[in-house]
Image (tube, rainbow over the protein chains, first blue to last red):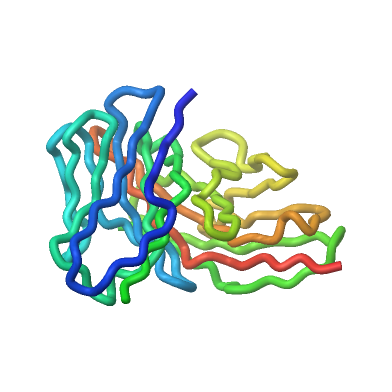
Length: 112
Length: 116
């Protein structure tokens, strides 16, 4: 069966520090991969998605970037964090528009 | 482009009572519809999905939803809720596109609070 792993579960970082969140998927090949951010009391906002190694699409302009160095690995990064980057970050994988996406357990990011 | 509206940000209900969480969508193309549940500090878990066929869809934990194309709605229902159903519920829509990654558009969520 397929599983998705995200880490760390929680992270507290100072403003201006770098960021690296990692997501890996097991049990499937060539998945579509997604990064979402969930702000308190709001829905999920799609940040990035990837249909293959090295292929990244950005949905909103922001202080973050994403990379997909391997088929089942998706990384969310920042060179300098802002206070507004705080939130709950979720990674997800899927296989097509007629199939649901499956989510990891998320990373709670707090910026001080 | 698609959009999803969940009009109720919070729904309080007593245990064993029925509940309906409302979801309306708009889209210029055919859609696939999903309901997800999120427990505190966890990711989203799929409750049910509508892809095609019967408009009444049954999901996990006793939930069901009905797709109504004319009213562009996909309301979630449960005939008798339990304390453990307390969570945030998200409606999501995916447009029918060929050859591209699916992109889900989420509503802002409905907090279901079940009390004794």
